[in-house]
Length: 78
View (cartoon, one colour):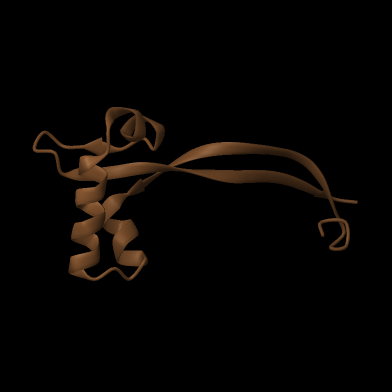
C-alpha cells in the first residue's frame, strides 16, 4: 500500500507509549461501571501481567497508566 501511495518503507520500530488510564477510558467512551470493572481487572492482575503492560499505580493502588506499544514508521517519497 505504501508503494501505491508513492512512498518507500524505510524503517519501522515498535515504541512503548504511556497512556493515562483516566484519559483512555474517557476517550473510549466507558461508562462509570465499565471503567470500574477495568480498574478492578487491572488491580487484580498478577505481577507478571502488570509488568508486561507497564501498569503504574499510585501509593493507594489507584491505576494511573499503562504502556501501549505503537508502530512508528519512516516513509520517503520515491
